[in-house]
Image (cartoon, rainbow, N blue to C red):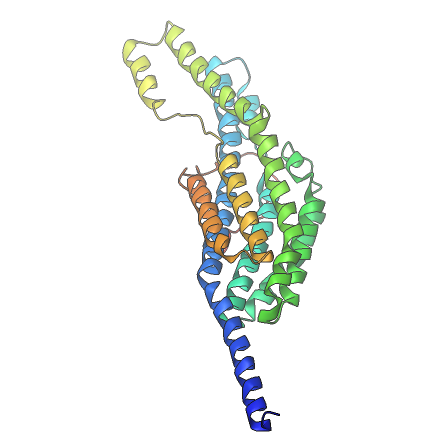
Length: 323
C-alpha cells in the first residue's frame, strides 16, 4: 500500500494539472475573444451607417422630385414647399437595430471578460439598459409612416435583446463560457434574421432601386427643362450643368456586407459553443472584414426637412458604442 503522503501528493499534482489545463484553455481564447469584440463593434457601426444611408437616399429622392416640380413651375409655391418638406423618418427603426447591435457588443465584451478573468460591472449594467430601452422602443414603434414596414419584426428584436441580456447578466464565472455561448445562439440567430429581412426588404425588393431611379430621373428632367427653356441663354444652361455636377443619387448598398458579417460572427459563436476554439478567431476576423466593407462605403449625411415645414419631433439616435 502506498504511503498516505504519496497519495495526497498525487492528488495535489492531478488537481494542479487540471487547473493549469483550464487556465491554458481560457488563455487560448483570449485572442479570439478580442477578435469577436472587434467584429461586433464594427458590425454595430455598419448597421448604424446603413440606416443613415437609407435615410439619405429617401430624403434625396424627395428633394430632387420636389426640385423637378419647382423647375417645371406647374404648381403653386406653397405646394412646392410642402413637397420639399416631405420626409420619411427612419430614426425609430434605426434605434431598434442599434440597440440590438449594442446588446451583441455587450455579449462580446462579456466573452472577453470571461476569457481574461476580468469582472467589469458595466457589462451587466449596459445589458440591463439595452433590455429596458428595447421595450420602450418597441412600444413607440407603432407610428404611421412610410418607414413603418421596417419595424414589422420589432417583437423578434425585443425578444433577442431580452434573452441575450438575461444570458449576459446570468454569466458570472469563467465556467459558464460554453453555456453562455449556447444561450446566445438563439438571440444571435434572431438578430441575423432581422438583418437578412431588412436587406431583402430594402435592397432585395425594388425599394432601393426605386429611390435611385427616382433621383436619376428627376435630375435628368431638371436638366432637360432648363435646356429646352427658350428664355435661358447658353451661359445659364452651362451654369445649371455645373451646379448639378455633384448631384449624384444617394445609393443603398451596405446590406449584403452586413448580412455576411453577422453570419460569420454567428458561426464564430457556434464554434465557441462547440469548443471548436481554433475556428473562432478566423471566423471573427472574416466577420470584421465584411463589416469593414460596409464601413468603407461612406454613409451620406441625411438631410432634414426644411425649417418652414411642420414636422413632428423625432428622437435623436446615438451611434453604437465602442468599448
